[in-house]
Picture 1: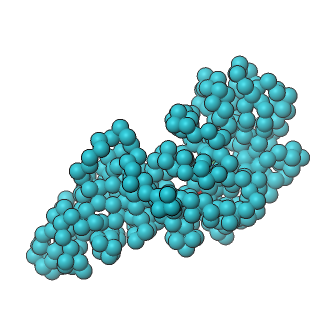
Picture 2 (picture 1 turned 30 degrees about the horizontal axis):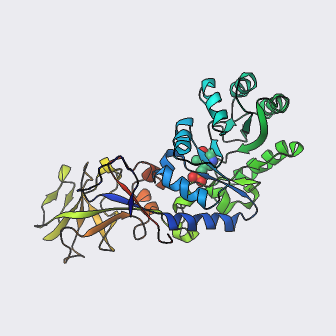
Length: 375
Ligand SMILES: *Cc1c(COP(=O)(O)O)cnc(C)c1O
């Protein structure tokens, strides 16, 4: 087990931590490859690799042979380059200011262009080597992307500017791919293919939901994010049902066990009252670690591998569990908040959010330890 944040203190006292299982990450990448065997893979590692630790995740994916990594901004890309990541890195939102362009060129980053202003900045900049650009087309998501007209104009100018542009690829993003029977995905794909066909350029449409549910979206490159981390992009399945394995196990330990009498209230607001005399365990994990404060009583927590219900309000540093089904539990026993026993998707649904949010919001206070069974 190796500590991922070398700047952090080597000895840890508080038991809250996250295990990051790289063999599960490689397994999930194989699932991507099985689903999209002809496609190139741009593995999405934005937001600290969805909270898992971008460097370890990027190194593992690079070694496993992904064709590119994708991040949200230059800062994220630079920290990967500084750590020695050499494979292509795509800036999914491009640059926020033209001043970034010399660095983007120097670091050989791929840049997404989604506004005419970004296109003009690329045409007019002075850079040391030409850029690989991805033109992002808006096929109906209406978040980022060029219109058909803007795209045609951009393509004309960019392909006539070899001193600044060496390769042009095309992408779009799906708005509703996580809804298996929403015909909008098909419409977006058809519109995209209609637009791009005359250009014969490499194309990308699919996020995780596209990889898993929409073969029409596979195109030349796929862009999986959440499925690499083992979580399902759909709200009607868990990661395991998609043959994925959780990469993060969020763990802590019992730090107190007390018995209370029938009718006594627990924690802030005394929102939970003991229905009978019963043992209650306190776990060192709270919303300041990224555990969702809105997880209600009844949300599953695993103590020694057995599911028990969360009870009462989640505090900043602690939460309570009902130990009636675990009368032998002791202080120090291992608690899993999510991972292989409690799917993060289940906790997310209980807290009325999505796994993307829970995973990416695990805070700095929680040390990540990398485990890698296959070495
Ligand atoms: C985040 C992101 C992805 C990955 O999406 P998942 O649903 O996590 O697979 C793909 N493409 C773009 C443009 C993104 O921003």
